[in-house]
Length: 163
Image 1 (cartoon, one colour):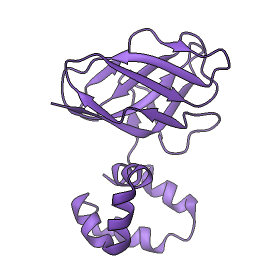
Image 2 (cartoon, rainbow, N blue to C red; image 1 turned 135 degrees about the vertical axis):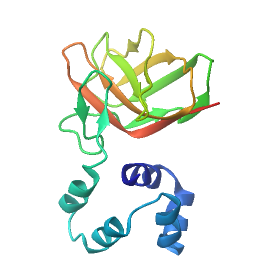
Image 3 (cartoon, one colour; image 1 turned 90 degrees about the horizontal axis):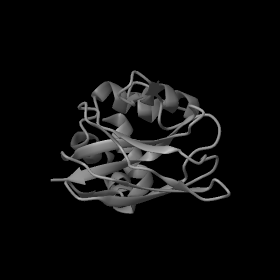
């Protein structure tokens, strides 16, 4: 839940404002443990925050685990849309750097559901990827891009499939 809170905080202005007004209410909403709350308050450095968040590791479903917030190297910088209905083809656009022709847009649900988007198109400069995906079940999904050379670029954004 800590990763979800941080990801939502990064992309939702309203959450940042609510957190500024009453952090404990937001911690309660995201079910952040008292231990994690205290550690967050005391963390003097980003490195300690990263260590705290490391407990919320994503899984691509094929046994590959990743730490989505601070991947090494190039990574996606924007992703849209953030949500969409189930059982409908949804067009996605990911912007970043280092995408290769044939890259795969992947979604993993911590509850076990994984979705791989259909064939993607990558801009000539490797800075934009477009793909279409359909979700059979609702929930929140981690998002990543996997290049044909095996490089995985985790996104800091989550996608929510709405039932």
